[in-house]
Image 1: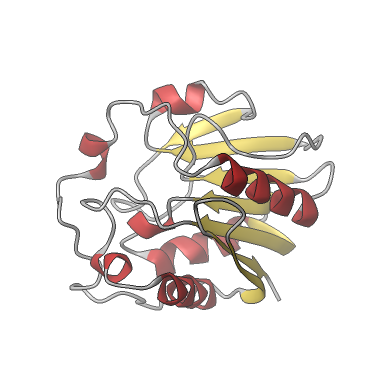
Image 2 (image 1 turned 90 degrees about the horizontal axis):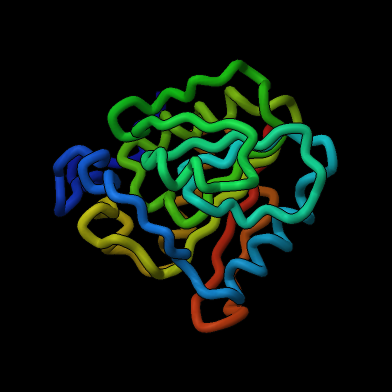
Length: 202
């Protein structure tokens, strides 16, 4: 398994278990409306009706288009937020920094979405390998981020990087998981910069 981050790079200012930090629900969005609209448009362009979607590191809103998916499964750290997400058909609560495995069958999803959360992963190589495992052949992963974060919980490598360097980091994560980069987007549709990488399984 590829180790993408060193022990120093994965260090967080707040090294308590993530579940402690995320115990209380936060019913807020972590980017502006223009970012979220651009994200929804991106999801619409890379998914199709009938797809099985995994919304990884999700919250109370998934930003998915009104596409008729076969199933949308959520994964995250706060049960109250996930329970409030009306796009999810089901959800699981788990901490990928404590256990980077996903409780889903091989090839059980057609698309994996990871929005505004990648900066908190301490073992991204293992997590992205799990994204690849649960994707069906030809599946797609979409990783989006802006310049906002909880700085005490973001890994050191992310905090120290420029936006372009953060995109490079995500590209390394995708490579570690066995993905090919199909698209790399850097725009500013509103106040918040919009960055996204789309990975596909060869």
